[in-house]
Length: 114
Length: 308
Image (cartoon, rainbow over all chains, first blue to last red; front, side):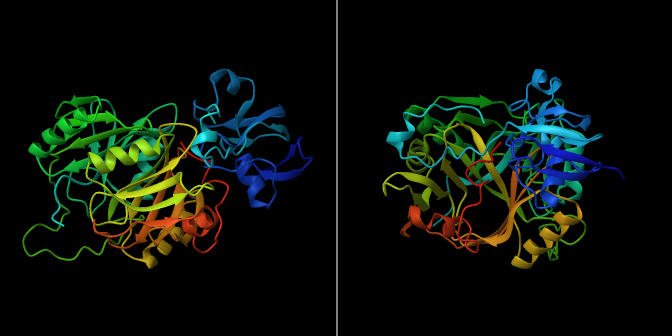
């Protein structure tokens, strides 16, 4: 089993991730933070990152959150990639709490895909 | 109350990113029974205890989520009657022919105000639970996998939950069981409704995006079996959202977790019986954390943010 160093550019946080774990799972397993954690299964999109440098293997991820073009350019869900080299990444996803608004306020808020 | 009209949740069609991986997972980890595939390639499942042909349908797609949620109604006359009532209420309905879903009769399909597709149907083949209808044994539901009793309810997210409440209570005969109010004390953040005497047959949360799935729930026989499900999840490295814990709302014990495509599921047990004469329970905005997660007494980040 090989380990690779993942660096989250936004926070400067870095951690060692085993190559059998997803980049997200590796972060969580060490109690590290920086990438939002959602379903961890490629469906919800909150853990989206832009890979700035490095190599990885990947699995199918929801087209509701990652287009084919984005995927090809290294904008991917961190729960669906495993490192095959050291990686540097930038966090794109976010937890959007777009629920808790009274009707009058909600009406003025545009909806957007998460 | 005599059970008439809409009886119970009957099926959920769930979109999955990798069908073969999901079929293995729903079979071996959830412990559901594979019930075949149709010409479109959709995979069908039931719990061991369910009598009708299927309750879960998996469809390969490029994004996760819920295609539709179906309720079984008492008989064909009820189906015709409810279709007329929906139309009179201004809801456009569509008939899906018998056999489109395996072993299932004609379905009445319509869109609810939160953008979700709902279906009613009266007929699905009774394949039994393996125990027979004469002198049956108790099925102890042991063996590999979580093995829930039944697919029980869904929690859906969308904008117009007020419109949903009106449709479900005024047309489909549901009763309001519990609700959570927003800061203003009047707007509903969420509602829990039943068509039976269960604590909920559907629940909904106000959300900026329509047609979203929060979870599909499976009923477990005991709190111990919910804890056993948690062990099975860790053995199989299942992504757990929260739990085992308890809901203040409905008072059920629970685990939220995710299928291999990120669709949230729930294994839950308990809750209380509801009758239509009972006063609904209201939760204030200040106590919503305790209402959703009774032991943590706060919402986790994912509850209001992570949906498919």
